[in-house]
Length: 82
Image (tube, rainbow, N blue to C red; front, side, top):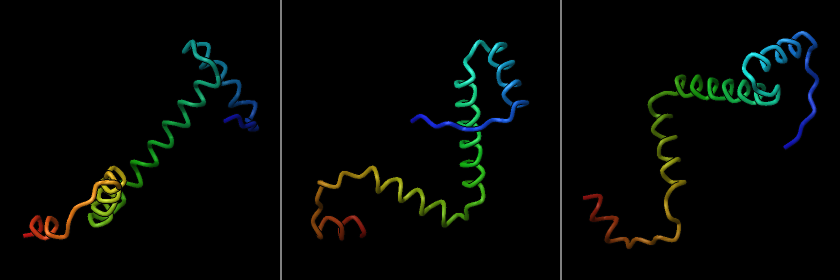
């Protein structure tokens, strides 16, 4: 996805210097920075969840991985619960 953003000249200069030192493009450095920030915020959010919310999130992730075409009979469910 291509997006145009305005960047402060001081930040842009620093990005260009970093790109020269790191031998990466400015775009690549910005992508890494954004990825790092998003990952940091996700971890921060996960740390703030209660145990119940963490369990709910885990269950949601497991449910998303489940095969929706796989059908189980009522007897099999009841036997698994016993």
